[in-house]
Image (cartoon, rainbow, N blue to C red):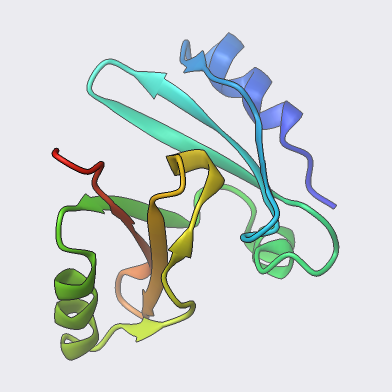
Amino acid sequence: MAELEPAIALFRDTLGARVGPVFEDPLQRVRLCFAEYDGGRVELVAPWGEDSPVSRLVAERGGAYHLCYETDDLEGDFERLRAGGFVPTSVAQPAVAFGGRRVVFLFSRLAQLIELVEAPTGA
């Protein structure tokens, strides 16, 4: 199973990121944390158990595997991407790392995996 700690060390010690706490998300079945830079952040993800939806993907591909976009219209952007040929790979569900805000994943051969995360209320 992939470990999160080597990625944390790489982003913190070699790439100079500020690395936050590790979250364990039982709904997504992943362990994750954020490596933050001024103006952006990278989500570091590792499978949490053999049945994690990212286990096979991380084992086969390793490294970066999706982009995440924050949206103030999760349903609207989800439908817009579906109409544009993206295939949903999950249903919208709360994510621990985002304070319970909902996330949803979609896939296209060209763009690969995209995650949409609800913007904070009032953002």
